Amino acid sequence: MNSHATSHRGTGPEPHPFAGARPTPGGTARRTLLRTALTGAAALGAGLGATGAATAAPGTAEPRPGTPDEALRELAAGNRRWRTYRERHPHENPALRRTLATGQHPFAVVLGCIDSRVPPELVFDQGLGDLMTVRTAGEVLDEAVLGSVAYGVLELGIPLVVVLGHQSCGAVRAAVAAEQSGEHLPAHMQYLVDQIRPAIDHGKDGDARIDATVSANVRLVRSRLAAEPELAAKVAAGKLAIVGARYELTTQAVNRLA
Image (cartoon, rainbow, N blue to C red; front, side, top):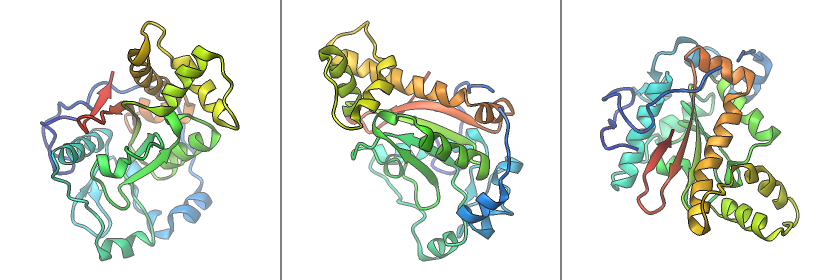
């Protein structure tokens, strides 16, 4: 993320690594019963996704990112704090915790890897109620993951989805190694390999192949999400951005992938 990003939500200069063009295209359907059950009555009247304007975070006076660009700027600012060792660990106070018992208004969905070194709330310096995170090895998609992302976007009105890969991904390394050896992995791990395999970059060798595949896999997962009709319609309407990014373990920086 970028050193020009502001540390305050919804303000600051436009250019940053997460800015850039957004993908395009499909439809929304509001399921009131589901929303009531999973977010609580307090969430029903918030209209986070309906207005597109920043709203106050529950239990605070801070403006809440309500558009894709505002959400991108907030993540950029948070990552800058993280990588410069100026973390705030926001939104953990008792008043906020009580407020969150009746509803939630996260401003971004982060689909990341299960790797213990890349917890989204830390690398973006966010707190309770800020992010909806979904984590699978290698950011691999399945029906549960797709449903979870769709719930965040369609039911909570979240304006941003980030597919977050990372340097030295073990799942990607395993997929590359399995393809080279022809080995079949035990239990359900073969499913992960099969899902990552189409992203393997055969134009490079050794560690360079693994590194290139990390980025290619993020782009593949992002494109699959962007092709989902209901998510695509939100993007086309300017209410959602789906972006790919990777976290560098050596620098702690998150950089957007074109």
